[in-house]
Every structure is written in C-alpha cells, then in structure tokens.
Image (cartoon, rainbow, N blue to C red; front, side, top):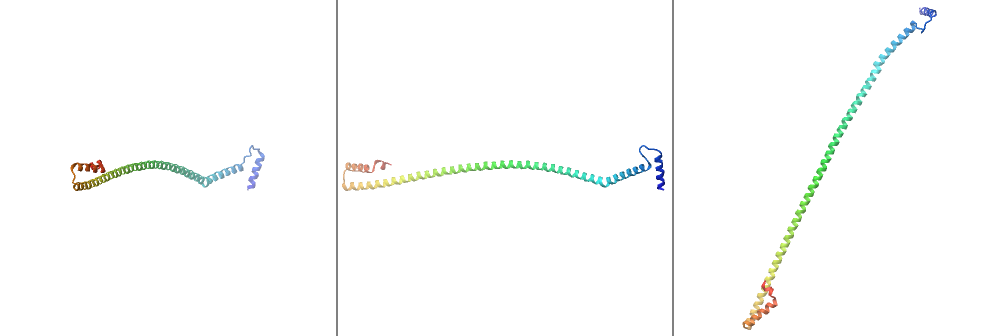
Length: 186
C-alpha cells in the first residue's frame, strides 16, 4: 500500500512542476521535526536549563552573600581599627600621665631629700656650735681653775713672804700678764 501512495505521488509530481517541491511527506516531516524540536526544547528546558538556571541563581546568591559578608567584615575591621586606635591614644595619654606623676613624685622626693639634708646639716652645725660652746666653757672653766690655782699659789707666796700691798699688787699684775688679760676676763 505504501508503494501505491508513492507511485501516486510520484505520478503527480511528474505531472505538475512545483516551485519548491512541497509535498505531503515534506510537510509531515517538517511538522514531525518541529514537534520533536519543541518536545526536545521542553524536555531539555525542564531537565537541563532549569537546573543550570538554578545553579546560576545559587551562584549569584552565594556571590551576593559573599560580597555582603565581605562588606560587613570590612565595616567590622574599620570599627575595630578605630577602637584600637582610640585605645592606643588612651594608652599614650595614660603613659604620659604616669610619666608626669612619676616626675612629680621624683621632684617631691628630691625636695624632701634636700629639705631633710638641709635640716640634718643645720642640726650638725647646731651640734657643732653647741659642742664648740661646751668646749669653750670647759676651757674657760679650766682657765678659771688654773687662775684659782695660781691665785692660791700667789696667796701662799703672799702669806709666806708677808709682803705689803704694793708688792702684792705687783705680783698680781705679773701673774695676770703671764696668763694674759683676755683669759681671766672671759
């Protein structure tokens, strides 16, 4: 039966010349090809293009998330940098304050040490003056004691010689000259 259709078609094609050679088989094949292409397009679209679109969409979302995360990390890093810079400034201020306090304490200690040294020096000078006074008094007491001894010796001489007042006055003057005027007057 197929051969009959072909023959009939072949006879018809010989009879009338066609411009494009359009016949029923060509139209059927073209329709079948179009149907296959559309079916293939829908099947591939469902099983290939949709997963590919999904992968691309997921990748796009992941990249957007990574960019957003990077921006947030950058903001946090800038905030941390500012915070650390502020802490460094505060630490510098604190170091300067500590150094200033240490200098003030050193100056106060220096002043205290100098004050104590002056007081000690004045105390030493005062003790030295007191010791000099005591030594001077001791020497004066010794001189007075010596004068008393000399006076008693003179009195012994006066009594033993039984001399008159002119001789006695001359002896006193002579004795005073031997020991010196300044010694017995102080």
